[in-house]
Length: 254
Image (cartoon, rainbow, N blue to C red; front, side):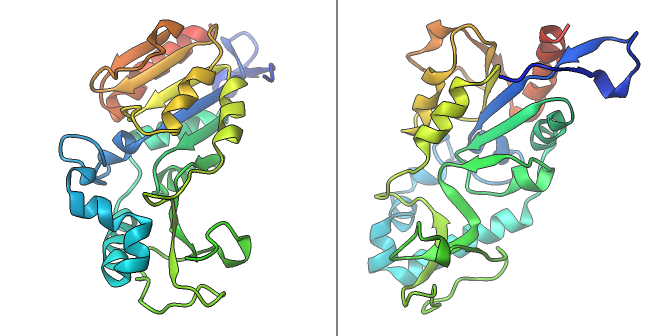
């Protein structure tokens, strides 16, 4: 937890000062929904359609590869066509004054396009492709423009089908322990746009220190077993909620 003094917007020493904080964000589909990317578990979420759940599974990858790729290519194109919104921009802008880490459950690249430089994708990225047989082998992971379809028979480099580098249903999520350590060391922890029902990512909230400021920005309160640990709700969409969060951060840094 680094502590150093920096001046707000480069103002002189007789102006208000702020403490450089280690701020960690955990973001979910709700932050990108305002950019036109469908949520997964909400009222109109993709996972309300059993066929789409199947098409996002490792079973579909191997048994219905052509339909699997069509579904994934459609998702890749949707992300390509989307643009970061004010909430993504707010988080990126905080890097001017703070150490910011974004841990996201999202498979889009909107945080990066907004300017965030330290983003951890728990569930992978649609902007990257990999081997169907060795998805964690760095030799076969590379970036691929999301407006370029992955075709049946595209070789990943090891003889297997090229696929998006995302975690499918039926596959394990890697990197949770590393993310937990980051949350443990946060000075401020903010959850945006997630129902906290997707595990193991939802368990990260229990690693935040009880004494630090903690916020949940979501249109509705989420049912979590750790509410007694001092999370403050900002009942709002992501783009509106970050305005309130800015006020909270200003108060903390006085």
